Length: 126
Image 1 (cartoon, rainbow, N blue to C red):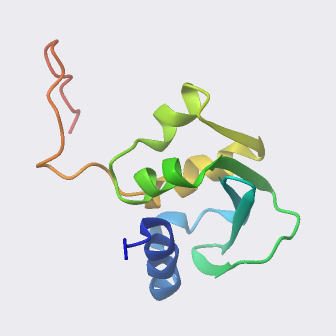
Image 2 (image 1 turned 90 degrees about the horizontal axis):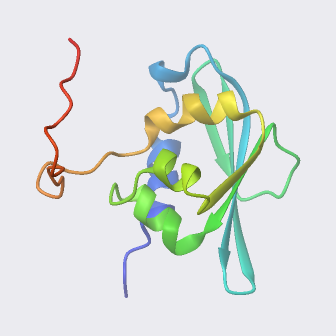
């Protein structure tokens, strides 16, 4: 059986309980993940960094809609969420600022998977 990167990601959020990176954020983000005719829903409530995750289909401040396979890539760090959003592979309704906060929790690519662009790499400001 293949591992479910999405379920593992949300389970890890539950284990965190509190996330200092989100102490300035309060709201709910629902992820509607399409898999054929089936839709998996994950609801993440953030209250000043305190996280709660459920599978409830409730109204949320921000709703993200994507294919389950795409979100598996995001949850495993293989796909960049903001790049997926910009190319239209993922849609967002509602409070986009909440998603900007939330995306800090999404894994980035591991160093072994990161590819150097053909152009000179951008330098990070320190």
